Length: 156
Image (cartoon, rainbow, N blue to C red; front, side, top):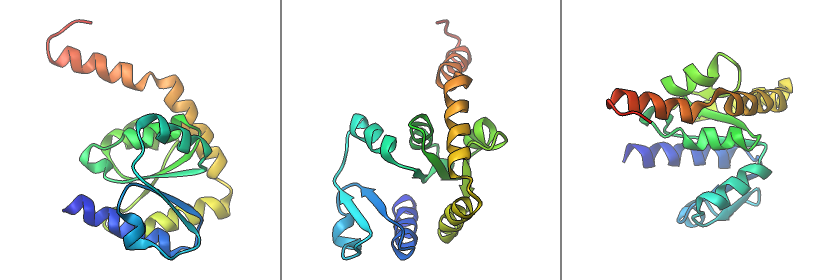
């Protein structure tokens, strides 16, 4: 329920912002329809999402604190600026290097504030470029996989 509530609050904040947005997933149009700046699309598979991210300037990641960070990493790998709720993984891997922007999950409006700040300051492209650089040079997933294997007492 909390994940659904958090998503609802973030989508409501986005729809109130008048920014052009694309919302992926079934069921949103009936709940948030009627706004000319919102485009809805149904559920997408991983390849379709990668393509959408490739056309996006900004990708919002939600529920990173629950361990859902794949959207953030995929967004950065596609060259988009990522705005996410805070997680220790994302903060340690990308936060210090300014490859990601964070918002307060308890206050959805801070996601819009982070986006507006990035737009006004001209940081969208630099943050996106830094995120892409960090994702492609860190060996993030292979490094994590090796640490997981080590913790399980396995060898690659």
